[in-house]
Image (cartoon, rainbow, N blue to C red; front, side, top):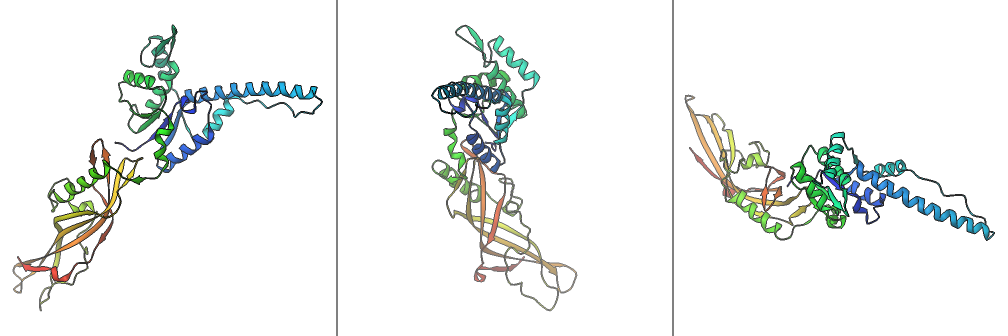
Length: 351
């Protein structure tokens, strides 16, 4: 599942009256920003919210003016008339709260109007009247903003019919969606401890990936050996004493490889990050290490080789991405720590 690129809000997210809430917009825009995502509201939706707000303000102003005149009849001095607001004022406030206003391009507007006229996609008849152009328009605009597909979007709308119809008309996958922001409250938390089935999925994957598949150099499965996964060079993995020396050429290290991963243990809670749909934890790998050395023989005419092997432990943080009911791993261990090796376990032998 891809990283969330944007959360998209429909007007009905703000209740039956569809009046904008700058505090809600700001809260979700901040949450998106903290996770390298954005909060999108189509300009069609922004205009709708703004118009509703202006109408509500005008009703309140008329009621206030009537009450102010009544106060004057009572002989009580009233404050001046309530100021007016415009749709531009409301639109500017929505932008200032942190929303990215997604523009509606001409071709999308034309197609949205045709959806209503031809009763296709989001278009439908209600009491004999064709509707749906606005719904089609905002869906089309956010799909266009997302490079013509729906990957990485979470659309929050109470009108699933319009979303499904327009996506079908566009020939794109239905995006992840929720009927209200309450369904997404978990995204306001950084992460949470993984529960079933994610915990079992991650534990099984760690065993399969690191233990049940061979991980020697050039093993080719599952695509990277442990040295590459940890982004390591071969020198100084473990600070061991040098090899026995003679009166001639010293041994030179040629390579260090992990010849076998014997076990993998999850050391702490597995964290489930909903924004990246990833699972991560610190793990410890029990491995067998092989160090290869070479030097000139005493005659200087040929090369001698030797190898030493020993068990060791590697700790690191692994992050894997949930893809449906499986895990997709991009091949990286971070925060690597090499635990001390018992010198009594080191086996040194010539080749």
